[in-house]
Length: 319
Image (cartoon, rainbow, N blue to C red):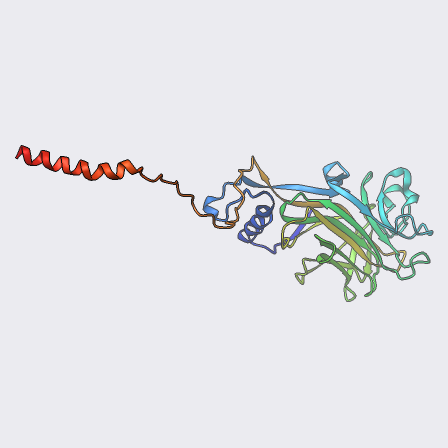
């Protein structure tokens, strides 16, 4: 399995972002690195969907929204989740799955392991969706994790056109969106696709993937390959939700693109968090109270001079 990853942030930047994220909320981090006693940051899988490689389908997925699921009347069109197994061969769009492994004649489709769940897109331009544009949304609970990255396995096959484009974007507030993966047809190239039965099919204009807008395109094939992108840190670090959107346009029943194992990775704090006092506002200045001293009584005022005379007389008599 090949994994492609693009780096976009440094360790110190991640630490600063983590401090900015957690300090306003829990107030348990010091600003000086030498005094940082917040436990250790540990890389973990934060959330996922269609995670065939993990043996589980979903984790920390708040919801998935797709208005196109089941909305296309033609069985050759689709833009939704599918779970493939040998008993539902005819329930998936024909252009999406390679059936040569089941003794059928086929020259188009992706190699999908039995029992796997994926999100597939085939011919989004149809009578039910004349504009051709389609999108699906995931909302993951990230629980203030930092140093986030997103990985997924992608596959595609077909003679795509220049207007066949897709993207996978993410956002923390559904207002500002960032590109994780961009997909577009390479109209000057061709690609060899290996079918399950070993037959090689060559097609022009393959679909390519670009990670983090880094300017490097990798051609996809009909075997799922993992790609990973680092995510931008939050500005304020206050969101517990990561929104992921897969969207695009494809016109053709023999042009398929699919995604599986959508996984969010990040770093979380381990160990008990130390508690620091919240910053206290100076507030109004209150003068320090002074203890009242009682006035000497009148008899003491007369007695002091007389006592002084007696002391002096005593001293003279002794001399």
